[in-house]
Image (cartoon, rainbow, N blue to C red; front, top):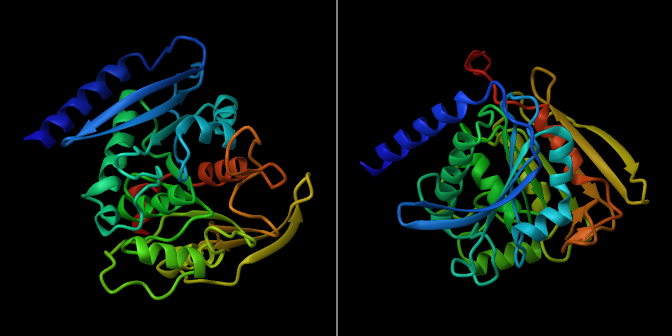
Length: 320
């Protein structure tokens, strides 16, 4: 009954929001607080809504902060709201509660939080659907990205809810199923990935995925970034063909290696950036936020470029 009422409520909100979609009013950018509840669990969030002008459904990017961070800090550090104002898309920043995790980390390493119908993935997916409905976002252009623990949860969401998220960005994170408790999480963060635990939950193929990781990351071993890439390639059509590789340097001097993997139809659907000499920080971010590296290439802009190149495939495309 509760799920039916939730679906009915979303349908009504979608209808009401759609009535005004043809000629939305102009207005200032909005940076609002909210709380969402589902099945007795509540989650706070911040939402950035750029000034309206076009009246067309806009993309939505869900941004998952790292441990000890909060939405305000993460928004400041990544600069994603600035890009949203320029490119006209919504940005949702869910907030992990200290009650759920003392370090405000997403619980990516606990089995119950690695499943579609339970724990944090279920709650985050429901919140995302609520924002889509209330703000008339484009359901075919919904993306999720995160840093560290947020990157690990972003990878989980892409696997558990492929019908919702069209592409995923993982910065300094870990792959779905890399750990099953705190001890295994600490081990994989320190030494890199081992074989997946026997009781790891089954996850589906990854959607298009872009990965950033510093090769001097002392918090999450850089081999974890390689595992995210390998897992994204493992079940894709055409397998893991040789990538298109290039070397580069950011305007601030950060060296990097970029690898792009094309699928059987020649479309780049997996992209990996290895940041040479970089630690555990969002590349190209603002020093006003925590865990950022202003010298790096602009990870926010590159993720956005990748995301917008990957709308959700239409059913006919999926069946080909």
